[in-house]
Image (cartoon, rainbow, N blue to C red):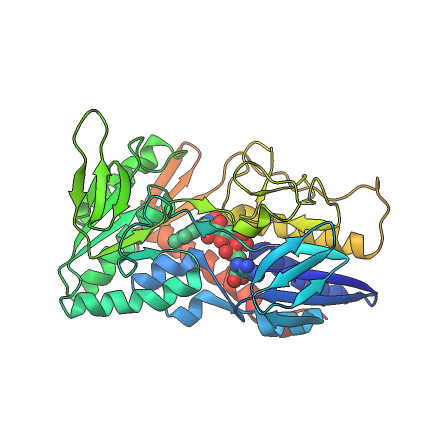
Length: 382
Ligand SMILES: Cc1cc2nc3c(=O)[nH]c(=O)nc-3n(C[C@H](O)[C@H](O)[C@H](O)COP(=O)(O)OP(=O)(O)OC[C@H]3O[C@@H](n4cnc5c(N)ncnc54)[C@H](O)[C@@H]3O)c2cc1C
């Protein structure tokens, strides 16, 4: 009997659960350890904020998936890993011994520059579960006139989507809130083509969102913006600051004994096996690869899933070292569909971009399809 420990119910782990449900290998005792029975889907968060869908449309119930996979569900968060001893500790103090480990625990938001803000004004977009719980309160505060200024910090696609979704939510609720988006001095949407950037700038202007290209720092008195170029830092008043400031690795990974890069991400090979501990696999935001085109995104987490699943099952079967394993080769260009608040979105793929209601419907179709594929364990051929 091999003990297979699945930690985190992230995008790639869903493929592992589905593969286990299809195969149901006899010689395995599987456990899924994750803090919530719900896997929240970031791709639909902006649509939910903007009022186009319900919270329950944006999450996958892990319970039927785990049951179909024959995995025992343990609702807890990992807090320490000792890779050499094959042991992981959770926040209840329990230790989980394993023969094979699959990590898909995602990432945190890197709020280090903002942490000095008053705690009630800082709202990190991750963990998603906490954001889904907190946003309705902020919207209620805006309705009651207690939230008048909101700033989103983050110049990536997530920051743009959150600012535009907030603008749409306030518009629908009939409240007047001054909105600002703070992106790094280098500009918005690094890695996207000029055309996509121009389209986003137009939508921000149309939604009345003030764009600041500056380094933001949180202080007890509020946000301070450094625009560089010798200008004196300026304060940006905000009752609420949403942080979408890039990803940060979960802190316990660094202490785990696993080979990690300088930022604490788990180093894996093309088969998503740890480069230091081959009985440990990792996929999604948690891992790092020295492969061109590999970035932290849901797209890569989803595409890596079937490879992770195939290689884990091969390890369960005891495939010998040196036998060929499946590899995930990221494409050099990925398609990004950026929701802009109302039922409208911008598509960005390499140098190509487009926008319109049809892009929003395309995104909505893909997002809802992703949820539906994982929703009903009964459709799996077990
Ligand atoms: C607003 C927004 C919109 C986005 N839109 C897109 C998009 O359109 N396309 C795209 O490609 N990317 C998008 N992203 C990025 C995307 O969210 C991440 O890259 C993606 O979620 C990574 O997937 P993952 O499987 O690594 O982690 P996640 O999907 O975050 O899953 C992590 C899992 O681990 C669990 N977990 C967390 N900590 C622990 C712990 N200590 N122990 C056990 N379990 C734990 C969580 O509960 C969760 O089940 C967006 C991000 C944001 C913030």
